[in-house]
Amino acid sequence: MGSQRQKRVAVVGGGPAGLAFLRVFKEFDLDWEVVLFEARDEIGGAWYRADDAQPDPERSKLPASPIYDSLTTNLPVNIMAFHEYQFPPGTALFPQAAVVQQYLLDFAEDFHLRKFVQFRSRVEDASWGNGAWNIRVAGQSEAQRFDHLVVANGHYNKPYQPDIPGLSDWGAVEGRDVMHSTWYREPGSYAGKRVLVIGGGPSGRDLSVEIARVALETFHSVKGFGRSDITNPKQRPAPASFPVEGNGKVVYTDGSIDEGVDVVILATGYELRLVNVFAKHLKGLNKIIKRPSSVPFLSQLIAQPQPPTPAEFPPHLWNSGAHIYPLAHHVFPISDDLPPSSIAFIGLSGYVAPFPLCEAQAAAAVHVFANPEALKIEQEKIWIEARNKELTDIAERAGGDESRAVGRLWHRVSEAAQFEYRDELLRFAGVTKWLTDDWLPAMFAEKVVLRQEWTDAARSGEGENLVQDARTKDD
Image (cartoon, rainbow, N blue to C red):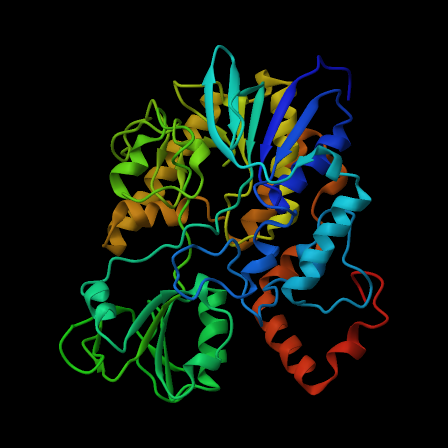
């Protein structure tokens, strides 16, 4: 794709997003120096459990991975895989986490990506000045200079705890427990207890079903649920409050009550904690969440003192804890503090097929790094302002925390739109060989049904027979 002057690019994070960038960089065949800084001793990101298989029982230190023992993917492997790199023949349609980790190890080996990685290298500071990034790694006194920075550290490292009246005091009572699902590994310790699982995402569904097999009683609380005792786990609306008095009382938004609850598990997702490395530019988040960041290298970037309104375009970046605003293409910052082509955020989008989308975002990043003029900022501003107004209107109608609601929706791309977005990025970058196959959107739309059917087949012993001779997507 033509010769370019040698640039230096720093990538933070050796999970799927970071590996996607390395693979795409090689596709462009550019004479740049690329260094990926990985804080741990192996690639894989959240898929790499290592010594976190059994996390600290005192919960004094967050586990590096939220993977629980029974976790399987919530996407079929032929949708989940990187472009032109399928899982091995015979892989379960929805495999366990260890299979995905091995897939990532194989991916790095087959594309010769390890040569770019510096392990045990936690980035502690990254500041923009004089046209370059100054990046300092823990244990090193001198900063390294780079032309571009890729933030690919994932977003499963800071649990989100909803502000539900009384929850903290309720959990402080002896005999009760409140924990985030990031600490969960297996259901054995919940035998004979009454357990409330809050959250309607994949982990909330998995944990409530698994715990219900051993617990005395299990409640699954999701916004939008009605109260039902027919199923196991029993369905409950969102909790409204946790009165300290009483025997483990929980009050729901419909006014109904459960008592005798012993454990509350918050399967409520994670926050985007990009606070401590871009401190001058990222102060906004510190006003909302007064806790240390799990990504200390970004605390200079967000200086917006309050959430931007739909009627304004902010001069600085804003991190609500759920989204970063404003980003062109969900990737490039539009800010007075630094050029849009200086940094790329890879992997912020949720409810998508992440591996191939990260590759598309990485392709756009490499293209913009090489050709800054390709990014049309004024056009991007128009789209961003319109989306912000649309989501703010939705949040106002729903009520509650408007800023949080907009943030949770911002990087969420709908099922069909994700493929349009992915192809838009690929066309923008000139990588048309990876455009979406026609069958992918329809299969993605049926992922929940497919997962249940696969689970039933696996339990009956038919699952292995179904995939043992599979060689292609049609198989």
